[in-house]
Image (cartoon, rainbow, N blue to C red; front, side, top):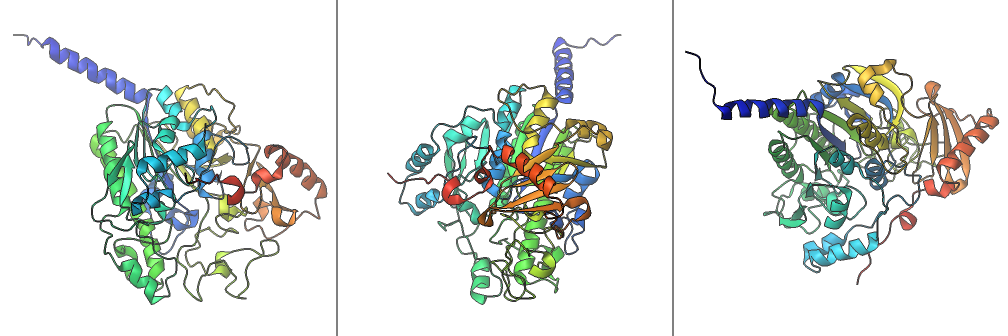
Length: 524
């Protein structure tokens, strides 16, 4: 006898087929943004004190961009990422000062009052398209888990305005300097974290040679729940809930931003006598980040959606030092061989002279906040097993604000305002054979002033405090040691004109200063 298949079963089979087709057309997207971590911390780039196998795997199985730039500082970096505009552009976003939610932790201000003050400082945001809205236009569920999406303080109103369907994490950058928050926010609601009792989220100092500092770092009284553990739980829950629907998940982790703090040292570095105690803590933070990437990958595999999920890994800016140790590596940055502070004109930070045993900036000059390459050049790995090239290294000149244009091109979404980002989708689909990818030149801001980098490797650096221009040719000068402005004055003139144009005819637009670029959150 022929078996008669019930109509309900046929319908379910048809629905599953349609869902599968839908998923194949629209891959999930997960963007993981490390905090203040240079490429040199990854074993993919030769880190010798620890391994990062899960992040390295994204590089080996995807596309690696070797000329990827971001901003020199966290808040403008995240704003450029979410708006698609350079941090030398004026009027595209508002950065507000942080710290007000610490008042709510102390009980001196209500959460509602804090949000009202921040909203007042933000005012009316520019009428532009934000990154989550690109995904929403393509039918995606959007979620962010981790640090506030930009600025130094945010609100539920701002998060909703940017297009997040789901959000869990901090609303205050100052609170992010601790890893044991008394509360976080989830979809607009303040969520108390039992066992965490410090109003400053358990923030410690950045020095490792002082016994008082060490005692404070390992005193776990009132520090019961580590923020990254909460983030991982919420990430996995978001993925499980939306496994049958295309989703975009943005995870701006705190790791490995300092002050260095971790519940326990990672076994891989705990017994390494070549590292100081605080360096072991920092290394454990990097290991924690890599381990969590591994957990996310395993969950995608378990759910059967790994092949159709794009994972992007990058960092918000160049490397920073959070493991000062007297006589070894110190802040403010100084040449440990001469004892002198760097003047950032004739000399600048290098790991070899500054005492960074990790070489976190991967041999480049400078660190976070600077317009040396060590402050702005970041790792960028893009992996989609089902759709993008594998094992490709691209030399295209790209930036963090290109991601929006890339996703809009992939999803066929029209962008209403004229962004500065460009799509690097051809590099992902065709590999390094595509020659028409990336920018002919980019500009970025810093605490020292703006800089311009061209596709063929010329770099013009403006040191604003001294109104000084310096010229370098990166293909032959990775470490920015040979200043060439006197030798090529015409090129300086040409690139200066180009830099000025990218800064809206005012180089001060590329000189980041908190007193001028950050709107204070005022009391009532």
